[in-house]
Image 1 (cartoon, rainbow, N blue to C red):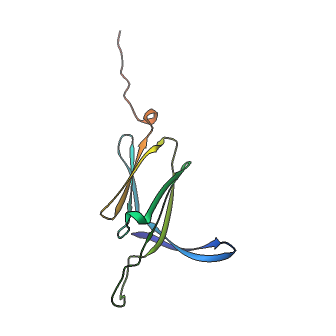
Image 2 (image 1 turned 30 degrees about the vertical axis):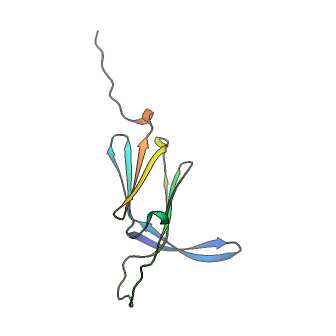
Image 3 (image 1 turned 180 degrees about the vertical axis):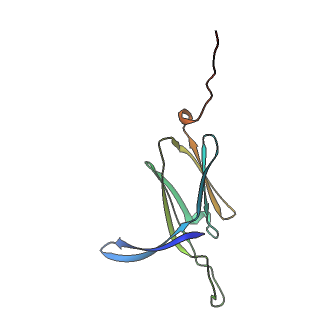
Length: 128
């Protein structure tokens, strides 16, 4: 799920608090003309633990992965738990009103559609 675990110091009122942020693995590709797909690996993350926001040219994904319950003592644990936040900068070609999200099988898929005016198109050649 995570390619990086980072402890960050943030302010909460007047005091400083250590927060652990996880960065999920991400794949970005243009699968078809006019559609960009973002896929983030999020095993064990429920839909209600995710929040996706668009603010201006920023797409922000935040959430939390709870620590799994165990009857015994961990001998090895490779799946980190904690808070994650990932911010992507959107260029002007992305239609902010047509971003779709789907969480299935531990993978969050975001489909970003380009504005109609930005999609590639064929030019017809006329002859006289």
